[in-house]
Image 1 (cartoon, rainbow, N blue to C red):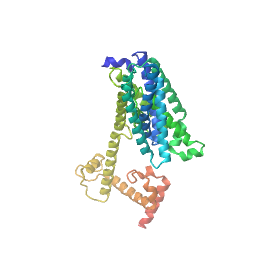
Image 2: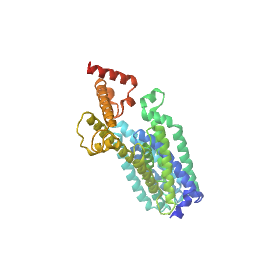
Image 3: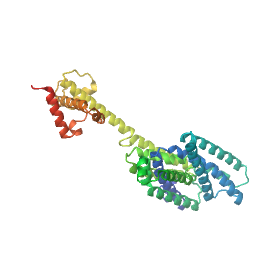
Image 4: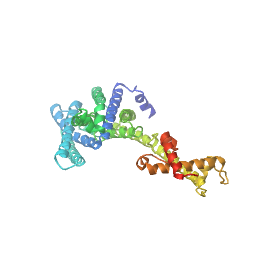
Length: 403
């Protein structure tokens, strides 16, 4: 198995395989970028409707091409038919949601199911036709790069490169509309046109990806990489760039693995590679991953216990919690027999004083204190400016009265 896919991994498995790999990587990068904008615009479900709407156009194009030349497997014609069908499905979704009381989700459900059902009927009819190439249609459902001609690989690669460049050029307008459509309009941006361009580029991803990932699975390539990228960054431009990288990586791994055996489905392996990247991001991302969240929770829990332990020491209250006692001993605040050390008594007095300052701050500025994360656990000098702390000290001193 290693000997089978290693040449593809280093782009030395032949001209066609290298072309397919590069084309799939460009497609993955474009799908990741446009998928990031669609995700930020909260319209990811539209991509599902577009993918299913390509099936009847694909089947009708196959019938027409097969009737003319006896073999319906002409990729440019099939992609054109799929694009026209997807455009019709997209227009119907927009029309239904704009002209009726149905929401966009209901319109998507209606169009998705109707178009896909019609496509399945057409494929059944095609199987009984006296046209060669019927078996090749299944490759457009789950993706298949085995036996792809060089001219087809070049077509996919060039279209994917054009798509990637278009998304890169329009990235600023897309980001502006995704986050603040009202402000975008004041800046002279036609939000309706930008939304239409976004959906048209999404449709282009779906159509180009039919041969690589298949119409059933291509939607995953527009959703999974952006979701994975979201775990690694909070900044939208970085998220878009990272989604492109992760989409290209998923396509690279999927095509490489599928080259090990001709029977392995390319689209499925690309999606599984994208899911593996998502799973790694979900678990191991430094700020939003599961492991990082568990560690942050444990650190927060220790801070709470240590703080409460110091406050209990300052008030001469007994401490029974085992974790609190271990943390106090580890910090050198108490001895093994539970007696406070000199360092511990000093820390307890400081903790009590800070608690009074925080309590006064919360009483004087309840609205501002509400937005201070973990107010009372962090040292007040790290959170508030010196002049604010001086004011609290003076108020606290005045509240105590003359000694």
